Length: 153
Image 1: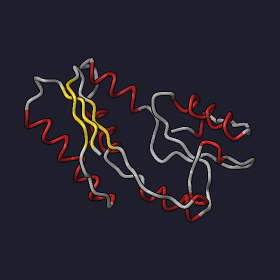
Image 2: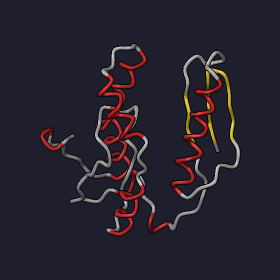
Image 3: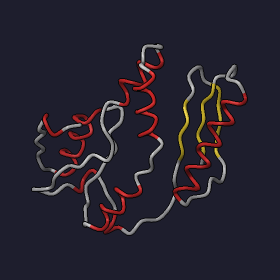
Image 4: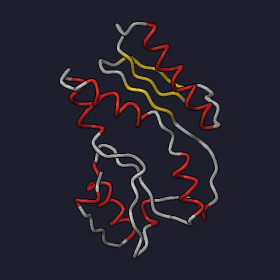
C-alpha cells in the first residue's frame, strides 16, 4: 500500500514521479502495490506498507539479539542530518546525491544474508538514532550492547 502526504501546490509531475518511483522499487523487490492512501500536508512524505507472511524462525525482531552477536549496519548513518539540511536549503549537492543513492537501494542482500546465517535480531535505524534503537533492542532482548565509535560508519 502507498502512503503519501503531499503539498497541494506540489507540481503533478513531481507527485507522479514519487508514485512511479515507489512502484518501480516495489517491482524490483518482487511485490505488487495494490492501493494506498493520499492526504495533503505541507511537507511531502511517502512510504509503503508491506503485508505478508514470514516463517517465525526466520524473522528478525528487536527481541532477537543474543549474547555475543555483532551488529551490522546495512547502510551508513546520518541520512537525517542531510535531509534536514536539505529542507533548510543548506545541504551540499554531493551529500544529497550520496544519501539519495543509498536511500534508493533495497536491503534484499542484507536480508538474504541474515536468513542464511540464522540471525534473529534486527531493527531499522531511523528517527531514534543508533543509540535509541539500540536501547529498544537491549530492552526487548535483555542483553547489553557495546558500540565502538571507530567502527561506526
